[in-house]
Image 1 (tube, rainbow, N blue to C red):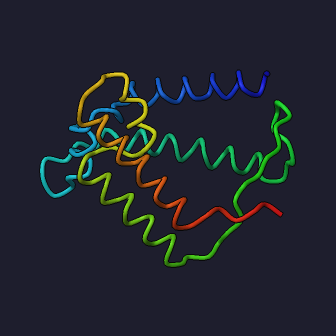
Image 2: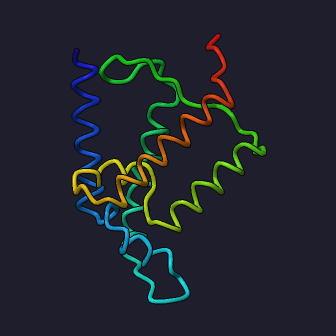
Length: 141
């Protein structure tokens, strides 16, 4: 039970952080991506902060088998740059650039009940579902 509670707490904290930082505001995100126009650099500080926390956390946890709340740690170890990675990155970037959302902020922004956000999330779920049918997950060994 404490694993689920801590996951819920982390998700709520993440969502509040996304909303507070402006990552759920598509105009702000698109302004950040417009580096040759009227560039809004605020989100660079948000991303730098997230990167600093991530680097510290991955270094702290990479040699551990369990987290501080005794959940198993399963970090990815794939270092191959292949067609799937490149195409997935391109699709992510195109979606982010066209609409101003990536998955986390899009899910957080559902609370505003804006039709475009709902359409984006439904499209994202459809894409994930189609991918799972076309590329089934490999069994864990």
